[in-house]
Length: 287
Image (cartoon, rainbow, N blue to C red; front, side):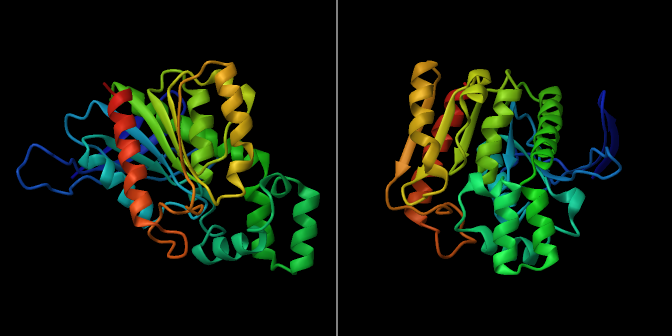
């Protein structure tokens, strides 16, 4: 185990690192990193796997559920392909609010509400009042769907991406649901990105798309009525701007078909095909 203190122009990181050496015949799951860039007096933590001799790193962006066991599994899966992986915990500075139960109750309150209405303070207040949601749920949703919080999440992701570029030659992003939309936004902020992958995430708007120079892979679930509403316009805009996009749509799949922790949505066969597409994409962009 190695403990070190690292400095960037803007942040400090406390790093506890054990290195995974894939050159050994028997794989050793020995690399877990907690990286904390503390600013605004509260830290942003991460789970990361640094593969020895890796030449590329992938920023893994979690869903609203946070940095859970599924996200750690994704990092391990990517490391088996020879990539380093960093998964920032975007809610770690508000851990007392973003508890698993609070998140579950909050999502239950707004699950049937379109995304655009969740970002409207008046619409959100009306729904919370109708459902008589407890204050802890109201506080979480008000924060989660505030533009300031979304900007902070993107800033945190950019900080980790900048760090990854100092250590690896190539960097890409992969995100799921909320994280899928953030994957596009992060690519727009990182012109040196090799690629970005979105599993059932919100498509970028035309201004964001203009700033994305890397290839994109968007994986959609056909039964996902929330995230798919912007996809047709996004595809047309992508053609107009002559961007590089791979689009895969699984007609019978539900929003979280890829997440084995969601027993209602999970589809093993579809997940295997989608991961095969993601693996092919990553190998192509990291050539």
